[in-house]
Each structure stands twice: as structure tokens, then as C-alpha cells.
Image 1: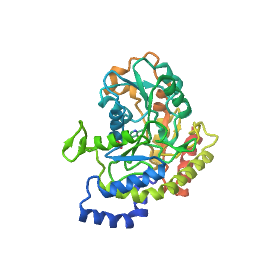
Image 2: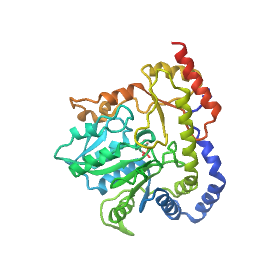
Image 3: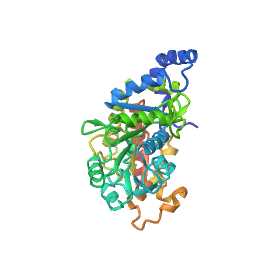
Image 4: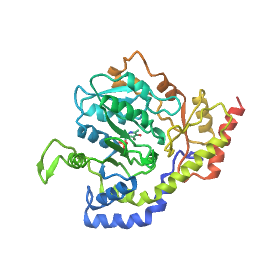
Length: 369
Ligand SMILES: Cc1ncc(COP(=O)(O)O)c(C=O)c1O
């Protein structure tokens, strides 16, 4: 049985753009701009202007974006990179792909974002960079992160897979560090019809290198100036994303409305509601914390309400990172987020009636305890 209230409904976004996008997709098959090419370039121009960044380099996924950023930042074997323990593992892949060492840091209790004070305690003579993740749609504490980076000469590379459009000090997330990395995985606030990613930077030389790296390291056709990757964005993704981009502000406004309604509807329950601490929140995910998380989730599933877990196993417990997990200081806050976090349905096309039903089901669960 499909849930009464799905966790997300991507078909609704497609409905809003399909007429215009389909005409471009038809043209793409005629002019064969399948890989990179004019549609991707047009999207790059639009999103650079939308974000207010000099350079936007589209690529094949958020993971590819993070890998490209690590290579372009010159991170390599022997280097350490500070990353949050509580994030999707892809934040860490790029560090590992270049042979560097991810140093996991605990996160803030209030937001789930990297705790700059904990990160400061983990800096060594080998630390070269920090990757703040703007988790769930809320900026990390960029003031504290930038201060730490300045004190130790660290490069800041933002993982902005989840918070496109959010601002900090009036500047778009992804435009605060040396580079910003974005994901357009279908379920993201701006989602492709498949995989997609982006790196932003204000540095002209870095931008040129990123463009080269994503395209087999080619400086000119069939001249491979350095070892590169096939990380180009598909033309069809450029089309879909370019047509969706002008709708994103409205979709984000609806997400904010829904989050405010959840806050009101769930007030007074023995739940920790999400806190907006760092200026802005675009509500990619609406994560509450409940000590009885699994029982609540089961009750909601039984009521036809789909929920998610982001993320149930913190990175210091991931098998592939076993060698890193020996830090005696541990990650108590990341553990709490993993054990108690429950993502409630929240998507741009969610109706007031669906929201009321979700709130009623959560209230019914606690009324029955
Ligand atoms: C925080 C974070 N970083 C990186 C990624 C990787 O993006 P992608 O799935 O496009 O490779 C994602 C999303 O999947 C993510 O949520």
C-alpha cells in the first residue's frame, strides 16, 4: 500500500515545468548536446547569477563536486580534513578519494551541524581544510568556522548539497569558502531528473582548473594537461535544472511555511523541534528528535505517513571508516542525532490537509503514551 502522505512527491515539481522543459529536451535530441554543451552552459550562467557567484561549474553529482574540490584545493596524502561525524557519507568520500585523512568532528546539539569548538580541538599540524555541511537546509556556524580556518590557515570547502538558496550574512551558502559543492540528486530542494552537481568559486584560476578536471583533464581537445575525470553534467539535467531554478524561491517559501506550521502544531509535545540558530533555513529536511524515535516512526508508518532517517549510523560507526574510529573523545552529540532524529514529510507540494494529518498522527501517538 502506498503511504497516504509520502515523504516527498517529485512529480509535482515536474508538473510545473514539464511543458517548457519538454520542448528543450526534444531539441536536445535533435542537436545532440547530450554531455555538457549548450544547455549545461546556460544552466551554469543562470545559477551563477542566482547564487551571486562568479563561477559555477556543473558536474555529474554532488559527490563528484566534492572530489573535484578536494583535487583543485590541492589536498592529498598526509593532509587532514575536518568533517562532521553526522552527515551523509558523501561529504567524506572526496577526502578519501584524494588519499587524505578525514578527521571526524562532533556536531552541535541544537542544529546537527559541525561544532567548531570540537573541530578546534582536533586540529593538528597536518590539518589543511574544513568541510562545513549545511545540514538539513540550515547554515553551519560559518562565523565560527571561518574564525577557526583563519587561525590555522585552513581552506573552507562548503558542502551545500542540502541548503541551496539559504543565506548567511546575506550571501548565498556555497559562496563563503574557497569552493562550494552542491548536489542536484532528485530529492534535493533543486533536483535533477537523475544525478547532478555543481562547484562554485570566486577564483578564476580554480574555476578553469575545475572545468578541465571534470572533462578528462583536457586543456584543449585531446590534450590532457593533467589526470582528469569524466564528471560532466548531462545536457538533459541542465535543461531540467534550468527550468526548475526560477521556481525554487517559491518552493522554498512553501517549505518555510510548512516548517512554521509544524512548529505550531507540534508545540508542547515531548519532542525536540528543529532550531534555526544560524540565520536561515531552507528546510531540505524537517528533523525532530524523539527519545522514542522508533516507536513514533512505527506509529506513523501504520498511519500511512512516510518518514525518513538522516542518518541512522554516524560516520565513526561506518565499516568503511573503521580505522578512524579510535578517537577516545567520541561523538556523543552525533550519536544522539543518529539515535533520535526522525525526518517528517515536508515537500513543496505538500498540502495543508496532509500537514494537519501528519501533526494529528504525531499528537495521537503521544496522547496514547
Ligand atoms: C550532505 C551531502 N553531501 C553530499 C551529497 C552527495 O551528493 P550526490 O548524491 O549528488 O552525489 C549529498 C546527497 O546525496 C548530501 O546530502
